[in-house]
Image 1 (cartoon, helix red, strand yellow):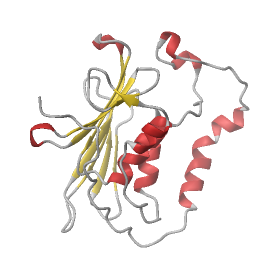
Image 2 (image 1 turned 60 degrees about the vertical axis):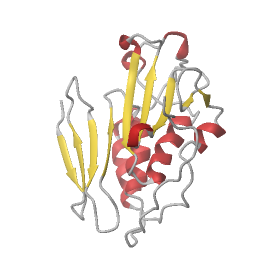
Image 3 (image 1 turned 45 degrees about the vertical axis):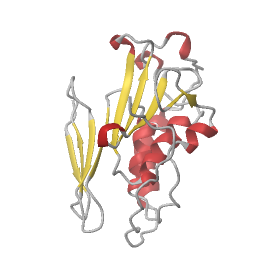
Amino acid sequence: MPRVLLTSPDQLAVLHLEPAPDQPWWVLRHHRTDTNPSWSVNFGARTPVEIIAAFTDTLTSPHAPPAPGSPYEPLLAAGWQPARDHDGLTSPDGIAHVEHFTDTGSNSWFIDVAIGGDPEGQVWKAYLSGTTPPHLITAVTGALADPAPIARDPHRLPHLGHHLHTTTAQVPAPDVAFALERRIDALTARPPSSTPAPSPPPGKTPPTRRPR
Protein backbone atom coordinates (compact mmCIF):
# COMPACT_ATOMS: atom_id res chain seq x y z
CA MET A 1 0.00 0.00 0.00
CA PRO A 2 2.41 2.71 -1.16
CA ARG A 3 1.87 6.35 -0.23
CA VAL A 4 3.96 8.67 -2.35
CA LEU A 5 4.31 12.45 -2.49
CA LEU A 6 6.39 13.97 -5.29
CA THR A 7 7.03 17.68 -5.84
CA SER A 8 8.29 19.28 -9.04
CA PRO A 9 11.64 21.11 -8.97
CA ASP A 10 9.88 24.49 -9.23
CA GLN A 11 7.61 23.55 -6.29
CA LEU A 12 4.50 24.29 -8.36
CA ALA A 13 3.24 20.74 -8.94
CA VAL A 14 2.56 18.00 -6.42
CA LEU A 15 1.75 14.38 -7.30
CA HIS A 16 0.07 12.40 -4.53
CA LEU A 17 -0.45 8.64 -4.65
CA GLU A 18 -2.52 7.13 -1.88
CA PRO A 19 -4.49 3.89 -2.26
CA ALA A 20 -7.64 5.08 -0.46
CA PRO A 21 -10.60 2.80 -1.26
CA ASP A 22 -13.16 5.59 -1.75
CA GLN A 23 -10.91 8.30 -3.19
CA PRO A 24 -8.88 8.82 -6.38
CA TRP A 25 -5.55 7.08 -6.04
CA TRP A 26 -3.53 9.48 -8.21
CA VAL A 27 -3.96 13.23 -7.67
CA LEU A 28 -1.83 15.94 -9.26
CA ARG A 29 -2.28 19.60 -8.36
CA HIS A 30 -0.52 22.52 -9.99
CA HIS A 31 -0.46 25.89 -8.26
CA ARG A 32 -1.39 29.03 -10.14
CA THR A 33 1.30 31.34 -11.51
CA ASP A 34 1.29 34.97 -12.59
CA THR A 35 0.14 33.92 -16.06
CA ASN A 36 -1.85 30.72 -15.54
CA PRO A 37 -4.57 29.55 -13.15
CA SER A 38 -4.22 26.54 -10.89
CA TRP A 39 -5.32 23.15 -12.20
CA SER A 40 -5.71 19.58 -11.01
CA VAL A 41 -6.29 16.06 -12.28
CA ASN A 42 -7.07 12.78 -10.61
CA PHE A 43 -7.22 9.16 -11.70
CA GLY A 44 -9.05 6.25 -10.12
CA ALA A 45 -7.44 3.07 -8.85
CA ARG A 46 -7.84 0.97 -12.00
CA THR A 47 -6.76 3.63 -14.46
CA PRO A 48 -4.30 1.92 -16.83
CA VAL A 49 -0.80 3.01 -15.93
CA GLU A 50 -0.13 3.78 -19.61
CA ILE A 51 -2.68 6.59 -19.46
CA ILE A 52 -1.21 8.09 -16.30
CA ALA A 53 2.28 7.76 -17.79
CA ALA A 54 1.17 9.56 -20.96
CA PHE A 55 0.08 12.46 -18.79
CA THR A 56 3.19 12.60 -16.59
CA ASP A 57 5.56 12.08 -19.54
CA THR A 58 3.97 15.01 -21.35
CA LEU A 59 3.98 17.13 -18.20
CA THR A 60 7.71 16.58 -17.68
CA SER A 61 8.67 16.71 -21.36
CA PRO A 62 11.55 19.14 -22.05
CA HIS A 63 10.01 20.02 -25.41
CA ALA A 64 7.61 22.88 -25.98
CA PRO A 65 3.95 21.78 -26.10
CA PRO A 66 2.40 21.34 -29.54
CA ALA A 67 -0.04 23.82 -31.00
CA PRO A 68 -3.30 23.62 -29.08
CA GLY A 69 -6.11 21.55 -30.52
CA SER A 70 -9.24 19.94 -29.23
CA PRO A 71 -8.61 17.01 -26.85
CA TYR A 72 -11.49 15.32 -28.66
CA GLU A 73 -9.42 15.01 -31.85
CA PRO A 74 -7.62 11.71 -30.98
CA LEU A 75 -10.95 10.17 -29.99
CA LEU A 76 -12.72 11.25 -33.17
CA ALA A 77 -9.82 9.91 -35.24
CA ALA A 78 -10.19 6.56 -33.45
CA GLY A 79 -13.88 6.29 -34.31
CA TRP A 80 -15.46 7.53 -31.08
CA GLN A 81 -19.01 8.77 -31.57
CA PRO A 82 -21.35 11.22 -29.83
CA ALA A 83 -23.16 9.44 -27.03
CA ARG A 84 -26.85 8.71 -27.43
CA ASP A 85 -27.93 9.68 -23.93
CA HIS A 86 -25.06 11.95 -22.89
CA ASP A 87 -22.95 14.73 -24.30
CA GLY A 88 -19.30 14.09 -25.11
CA LEU A 89 -17.94 11.04 -26.95
CA THR A 90 -18.25 7.29 -26.39
CA SER A 91 -15.78 4.60 -27.47
CA PRO A 92 -16.76 2.15 -30.24
CA ASP A 93 -17.22 -0.65 -27.68
CA GLY A 94 -19.52 1.55 -25.61
CA ILE A 95 -17.71 1.29 -22.26
CA ALA A 96 -15.63 4.48 -22.20
CA HIS A 97 -17.06 7.98 -22.18
CA VAL A 98 -15.30 11.36 -22.28
CA GLU A 99 -17.14 14.60 -21.65
CA HIS A 100 -16.13 18.23 -21.45
CA PHE A 101 -18.61 19.59 -18.94
CA THR A 102 -19.22 23.32 -19.36
CA ASP A 103 -22.73 23.68 -18.00
CA THR A 104 -23.71 26.25 -15.34
CA GLY A 105 -20.35 27.99 -15.50
CA SER A 106 -18.24 24.93 -14.66
CA ASN A 107 -15.37 23.72 -16.81
CA SER A 108 -14.17 20.15 -16.30
CA TRP A 109 -13.28 17.02 -18.22
CA PHE A 110 -14.60 13.66 -17.05
CA ILE A 111 -13.63 10.16 -18.17
CA ASP A 112 -15.80 7.26 -17.15
CA VAL A 113 -15.15 3.62 -18.05
CA ALA A 114 -17.99 1.33 -17.03
CA ILE A 115 -19.98 -1.68 -18.16
CA GLY A 116 -23.70 -1.02 -18.05
CA GLY A 117 -25.42 1.40 -15.71
CA ASP A 118 -24.75 -0.55 -12.53
CA PRO A 119 -22.26 1.22 -10.21
CA GLU A 120 -20.62 -2.16 -9.68
CA GLY A 121 -19.74 -2.16 -13.37
CA GLN A 122 -17.47 0.88 -13.16
CA VAL A 123 -13.88 0.05 -14.12
CA TRP A 124 -12.21 3.43 -13.57
CA LYS A 125 -12.77 7.15 -13.85
CA ALA A 126 -10.73 10.33 -14.11
CA TYR A 127 -11.21 14.06 -13.70
CA LEU A 128 -9.27 16.95 -15.26
CA SER A 129 -10.05 20.55 -14.45
CA GLY A 130 -10.83 22.73 -17.44
CA THR A 131 -7.81 24.90 -16.67
CA THR A 132 -5.48 21.94 -17.25
CA PRO A 133 -3.20 22.80 -20.21
CA PRO A 134 -4.90 21.40 -23.33
CA HIS A 135 -1.84 19.47 -24.53
CA LEU A 136 -1.92 17.49 -21.25
CA ILE A 137 -5.60 16.66 -21.68
CA THR A 138 -4.86 15.60 -25.26
CA ALA A 139 -2.08 13.32 -23.99
CA VAL A 140 -4.69 11.51 -21.89
CA THR A 141 -7.29 11.24 -24.66
CA GLY A 142 -4.59 10.13 -27.09
CA ALA A 143 -3.51 7.33 -24.75
CA LEU A 144 -7.14 6.40 -24.18
CA ALA A 145 -7.71 6.09 -27.93
CA ASP A 146 -4.52 4.10 -28.56
CA PRO A 147 -5.48 0.64 -29.87
CA ALA A 148 -2.16 -0.97 -28.94
CA PRO A 149 -2.54 -3.90 -26.49
CA ILE A 150 -1.20 -3.50 -22.96
CA ALA A 151 0.85 -6.04 -21.03
CA ARG A 152 -0.83 -7.34 -17.90
CA ASP A 153 -0.81 -10.32 -15.58
CA PRO A 154 -4.00 -12.13 -16.69
CA HIS A 155 -4.81 -12.96 -13.06
CA ARG A 156 -4.96 -9.26 -12.16
CA LEU A 157 -7.32 -8.04 -14.86
CA PRO A 158 -10.78 -6.68 -14.02
CA HIS A 159 -13.69 -8.78 -15.18
CA LEU A 160 -14.90 -7.16 -18.41
CA GLY A 161 -16.71 -10.09 -19.96
CA HIS A 162 -16.77 -10.09 -23.75
CA HIS A 163 -15.21 -6.57 -23.83
CA LEU A 164 -11.83 -8.01 -22.89
CA HIS A 165 -9.61 -9.69 -25.48
CA THR A 166 -6.44 -11.37 -24.24
CA THR A 167 -3.44 -13.01 -25.86
CA THR A 168 -0.99 -15.04 -23.78
CA ALA A 169 2.74 -14.65 -24.42
CA GLN A 170 5.87 -15.71 -22.59
CA VAL A 171 7.92 -12.73 -21.41
CA PRO A 172 11.60 -13.14 -20.43
CA ALA A 173 12.12 -12.56 -16.72
CA PRO A 174 14.75 -9.77 -17.25
CA ASP A 175 12.25 -7.81 -19.35
CA VAL A 176 9.92 -7.72 -16.36
CA ALA A 177 12.53 -7.28 -13.65
CA PHE A 178 14.25 -4.31 -15.29
CA ALA A 179 11.32 -2.62 -17.04
CA LEU A 180 11.12 0.20 -14.48
CA GLU A 181 14.86 0.83 -14.56
CA ARG A 182 14.84 1.03 -18.37
CA ARG A 183 11.93 3.43 -18.30
CA ILE A 184 13.64 5.70 -15.78
CA ASP A 185 16.84 5.65 -17.83
CA ALA A 186 14.92 6.62 -20.97
CA LEU A 187 13.16 9.50 -19.23
CA THR A 188 16.28 10.88 -17.57
CA ALA A 189 18.13 10.70 -20.91
CA ARG A 190 15.79 13.28 -22.43
CA PRO A 191 17.71 16.47 -23.20
CA PRO A 192 16.98 19.33 -20.82
CA SER A 193 15.56 22.59 -22.07
CA SER A 194 14.07 25.74 -20.75
CA THR A 195 10.63 25.65 -19.23
CA PRO A 196 8.05 25.35 -22.02
CA ALA A 197 5.85 28.34 -22.68
CA PRO A 198 2.39 27.98 -21.14
CA SER A 199 -0.30 26.74 -23.49
CA PRO A 200 -3.27 28.97 -24.20
CA PRO A 201 -6.58 27.78 -22.78
CA PRO A 202 -8.55 25.37 -24.98
CA GLY A 203 -11.12 26.85 -27.32
CA LYS A 204 -14.77 26.00 -27.21
CA THR A 205 -15.08 22.91 -29.36
CA PRO A 206 -18.12 20.67 -29.51
CA PRO A 207 -19.38 18.39 -28.22
CA THR A 208 -19.79 19.78 -24.72
CA ARG A 209 -22.60 19.50 -22.24
CA ARG A 210 -25.43 21.81 -23.23
CA PRO A 211 -27.72 23.63 -20.82
CA ARG A 212 -30.80 21.54 -20.14
